[in-house]
Length: 118
Image (cartoon, rainbow, N blue to C red):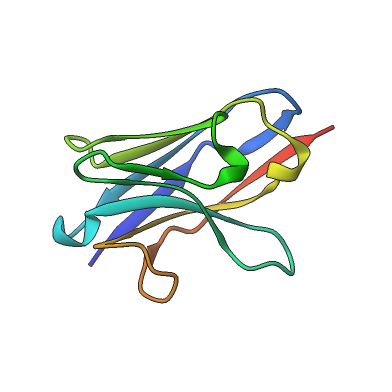
């Protein structure tokens, strides 16, 4: 069983920064890849960034250069540093984990709201 607990969401002005954290517990095999998705009402959940146990990262084009994902394997914690936030970054952000990330097979956290005001 895998559990993911997110924290760090909130309200910030455009141009500001937030850091999301995701603490994972459970099968290490299932925690090979951890990432962050986001979702707004009426839109599909989209992958924002991911990182493998070995440190390989992947970013959506919309956040490249502004967001940075990192991982502390000893603490089973993944961080998403979000800088230069824009109103269009407003969404519920979900931590997800899996051997590889797959919308239908991921383990999911409960989500944390990020709101960027203009």
